[in-house]
Image (cartoon, rainbow, N blue to C red; front, side, top):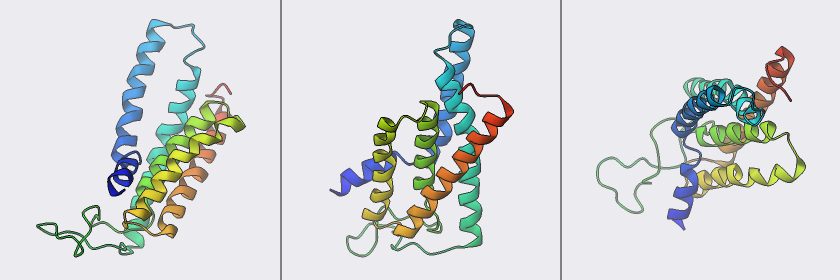
Length: 173
């Protein structure tokens, strides 16, 4: 079961959600150049215009919060050789609060939900970031309050960015 949670946890890797939007931005530029009058690219544009500033703000906020409130993780970091029962191989040495994995995954999926016009049937997408949060608790590297704080910050910031981008008129929604 531990391998399952580790795999789910990977979906929330902050580094993944920094690199993926940059790669998608390149894809968007290619599509924009190849099909300049296509409306099919609008969901990707909306996703990127919301995700890139949101992920920057969320991960920056999480980093600054971890500096300001350096709460210890509920696990023991492995130093040297992994010894079962004495340390947690998934434990990181940075502070615990709030969860970067929860923040990154909820930012990405909230932006995607908005870009896809927020249809109620799409709420099922949030199973994946919820599983990321559960994986962080199941692996013993975060507490429930850590993941709730990361997820809440992500949804709040992403919705604020979306409202701001709509107000500027940069998004067709």
